Each structure stands twice: as C-alpha cells, then as structure tokens.
Image (cartoon, rainbow, N blue to C red):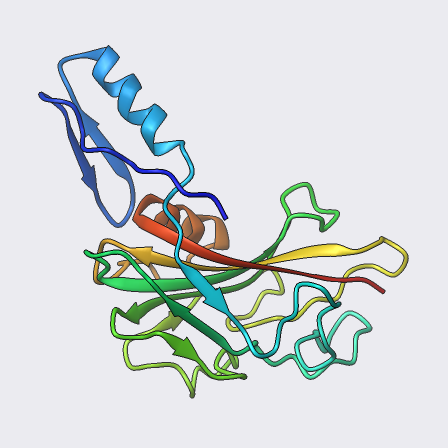
Length: 206
C-alpha cells in the first residue's frame, strides 16, 4: 500500500472535483502541470481486512464465480476498514482483475454511494438484487454484464490471476451516474473523487 500526500492547488488554480470529471481552471500552464503531477502520485492509504480473503492463499470457493464453467458460491467477501481520512463523505468498493485476457482487465465488482458511516460489509453483501446493501448504495454492471459481485473465474491454464479489492474514501457524498453506466465510467468517477484507498490483493487460478 502506497502513501503520499496530494497538496493543495497552487495560487491562481482551482481544482474542481465533479461527479463526471476533474476540471482545472488556471491562467498558468505550469500550475496546471504541477497539479496533474500531484494527482498522479499514489494516494494516502488506510487499512482494509477480511475474514474471507487471505493474501497468502488462493481465493476460497465461497468467493469464486458461478459462471463460465466455475462452480463457486459467488459470495462477495466480508470486508472491514479503519482509518479513512477526515473529509470522507462516502465510500466505493471495487474488485478488479488486471490479468484477464481482454486487453482491459476485468471488473468483478463496483459498489458506490456507501454512507460515510460504513466501515464493514458482511459476506454476500454484493448480491445482484442489492437486498443487503446499505440504504442509498448502488452497484454498477460488471464485465459479466450484470450488477453486483461476480467472483473469479479465469480461463483454465491461464495461471494465477490477481484480484484487487479496494475501498475508496470519496470526497463527495454521492456519485451522480446514469443508469447502466459502464464500468469504465464508474471507475473514472470513483478515481476522480478519491481521497484515499485501502487494498487487499488475492489470487485465483484454474
């Protein structure tokens, strides 16, 4: 987990974080370049743990997918986090596999608009029907083509895939996204409003 500070914008430059973009207004190109450099640095981190994920072991059958030839239980893992920064107004949770043979990885879970008071999710929170989500939270369509958590199911013989489970502390109370927003659009909005992240890495192969 990396940690670095994103400093305030230089004099004469305002960084406006909106639900759909990060807008820069400046009279100086050098000031704008400085802010882009700061935004590209690793964000501060906080702590994420799980009773279902062990980074030293493959992901268990309970969290494995139940499609594409896999026969797991497809339950999103239990997650708990502490240490989110001051100013956090909501949380988002994602799971991403950069090793999927798609050219763009694979989004397994995109959960957002979690209230700032949230600090844990029980096993199975990410069901497609959203019945166990905290009030106001929403799930985007994953690369499986449906909302909710979709567990690992890499191609047989493709080797271990990495699954990054990340909790994002956001500086906005809500992401205003259209129904059916793509995973890329949701991810862009999450990253554009992130104050800090917490991460667990787990692996799985067939």
